Image (cartoon, rainbow, N blue to C red; front, side):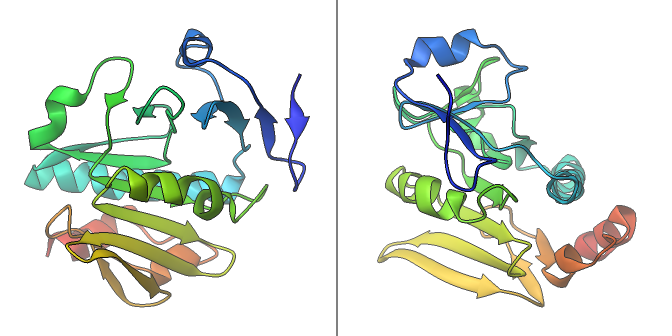
Length: 201
């Protein structure tokens, strides 16, 4: 039985075993969060932001090296109840041996989540605490509704949260990679090629 969460576009199926999730295959629209199957249909804006950021990160890493980026159909297995599928994840070179054809074993180095129309607070409410518990070094939560990026960076003293609505946001996990947060709020996203030229200098 699939139950609806509020807002109604977010769907959840509780009481699911890990092997049932992986039996769904790579084309499934569900992710595995705290022993539940969760689905949040993506809007056109969400997909546009996803494609823009994926292109920027992939081309940057192709050019500069240092790691790989994967999109939202690649699970990140944290334990037997958690295999979330972040919108984007980056694994640095030293962790590539944890990448299997099926999933990433353990936490990524950088995770990016884009808020969805169905429940804009879902990632911060449900996934961020588990990401921090897993010790993910850098987490970006992009909220196109409030026009803010909340970055969480792990330090010796704990996580530092920074909110960026305009101006340069630099990654600590991917040295040299940055975005201007204002790019994300434009009704029509800017040229990927033009932005890459600025990032690469």
